[in-house]
Length: 148
Image (cartoon, rainbow, N blue to C red; front, side, top):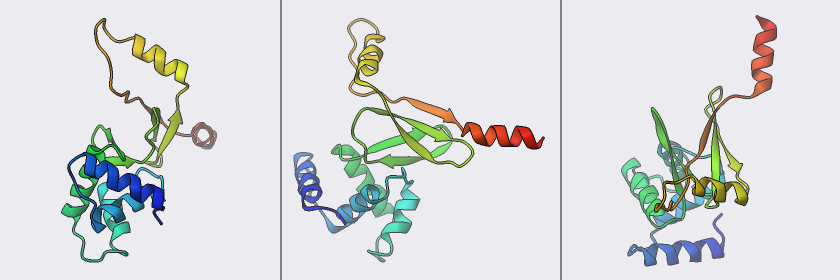
């Protein structure tokens, strides 16, 4: 369930971006916040259908785009994979577990973020940092190696 504070933030951000709050945007936002597992648009659609059976996949995509546009969620892109959506607005990285397909947030210390910004060419400033790791759980590799 979306809290009053989150609903107010949603309405304010949408208004500031020239958009209005709609029941569809509210339920899509609630779904993304509710289970912080970086869902795809199709997964959001499947979850929203129970609360709003008449919603279309196109509407879900439009809602997600609006939420990204106004800075309430982030779009996480991976090569050859569908976009996923993340409600964590703090600077962080993502770990893509290649064995399960799951995406996990990875906290980045503030001093490391500052060091990353210092790597930019002279005169450039980054608005955000998109840092991703790919791999799988070490224990899974160890178990597979032992079985072979």
